Structures are given as structure tokens and as C-alpha cells.
Image (tube, rainbow, N blue to C red; front, side, top):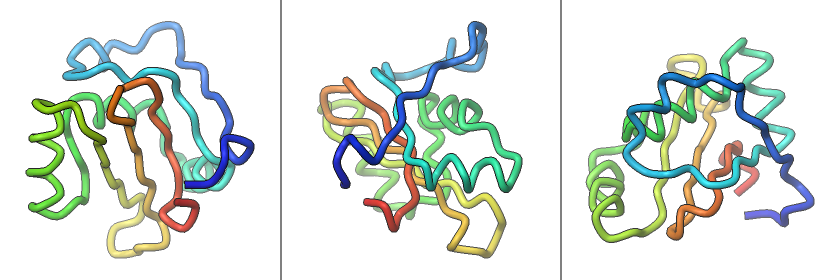
Length: 113
């Protein structure tokens, strides 16, 4: 992952009812400029994706990665979700990664990892 200079802190809206169903804390929120631009271009809310991630909806990860995420909820390791904003177009993927200690959750494009 690139340095923190390549990410922006993100502030959550004052009310986010979807996060009430969160299965783990997101910690501090961050997003890379590339991820934010991609989300804006596709009119997708970062907070909607964060809510999916927090509810353990891992998006487009494979079955092996989904199982690893489910185990990470139990054992406290890193979590990775992948959301494809335009079906069939891998260039529109956004990853959301929560660190093992749940101190930070970052949205980024795979090429920014």
C-alpha cells in the first residue's frame, strides 16, 4: 500500500443507519484520490460501500477470500472487500481494506495497493 500521503481522511455523514448492522468497527476512514474519483465518476457513494463492508458483504471477492474474511472476523486479521462499479469491467474495482486491529479502513483502487 502507498504511504498515508496518498490517502485522504473521509468524514462520515452525521446519520448512517446502515452502519447500525456493522459486524466490526471501521476505525478511521481513509480513501485514495483514485478511489474517490472512480466512485464520483460512477455516482457511487463511498459510505454505501463502507456499510456493505461493515455488514460483511464482501462484494466481488472469490469464495476463498470470502472464507478468509469470515475467519478474520473471528481471529482479528485484515479484511478485504472488492466492489466492481461497472459489471464486467475490472477497471472499475474499488477495494476496501480494514486493518487487523480495525484502527483504519481504506478505500482504494487495486492499482494503488
